[in-house]
Length: 190
Image 1 (cartoon, rainbow, N blue to C red):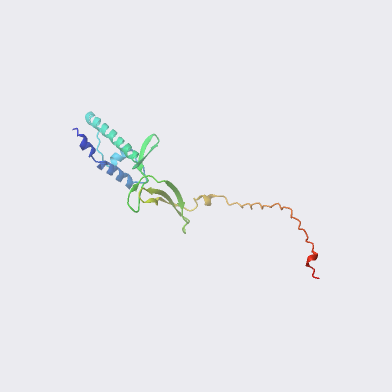
Image 2: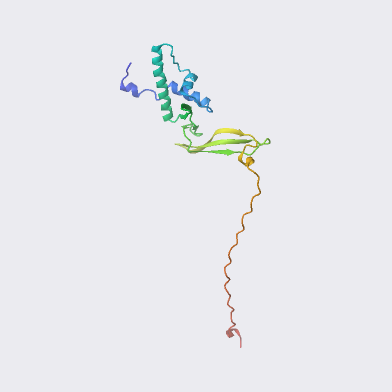
């Protein structure tokens, strides 16, 4: 049933499906899913038993995929093509600690490894620098990993004797000859 322009403009900017998709992906941040897996995960009903129903379900799948593309455009989820299949994952976003505004993309990310514990394991943090439109820049830990002992770059390096740096020799400038002062007779008292 068609609606008028005013009803269309007053419509919701997001719907229940959007909330379900972002909730599903947010709970499973470490994994990426295809559109079909997301549909099954949020129990988006499609059926292909009869030809008539399969036609409607095909349109529903196309609409769902278009909706996922819309969420990618809004930077709420991330899309990557792996082995010729589209995978979707929750965007690496963070909430501003002061106002709670969701910032989708980090300005900068980096890894930082802590000191080893008694077992030799290190904790590696993946940190993101975000910018809140109201309160400025803030940092958030995006991911934590335990690095087992003996797998860091330093431990894998071959221990070799370091060469001593060459000593620099400075060329000495020739010294200026000092002129001897002659005693003047003016100092002699009469």
